Image (tube, rainbow, N blue to C red; front, top):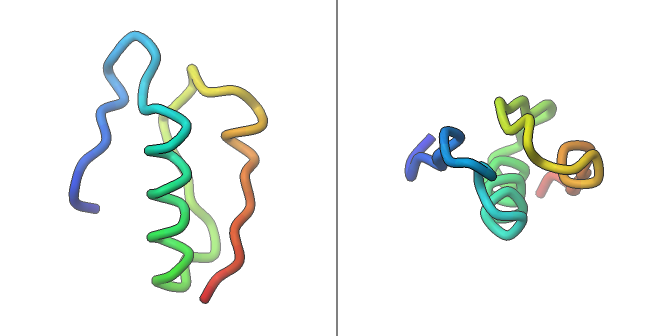
Length: 52
C-alpha cells in the first residue's frame, strides 16, 4: 500500500504512522491487517479500528 512505511529503521514506524495506516485500511474495509513492525509495543500491534 502506498505510501510505504519503513520497517527497517531502528524503531520502525511511529505510532502516528501506524494509526494512520490502520485508519486508512479500515476505511477500505480491511478485516485483518498484519505487519512486520516487531519493535512496536503490544498496544500498537493489537490496535483495533472500526471499518467505515
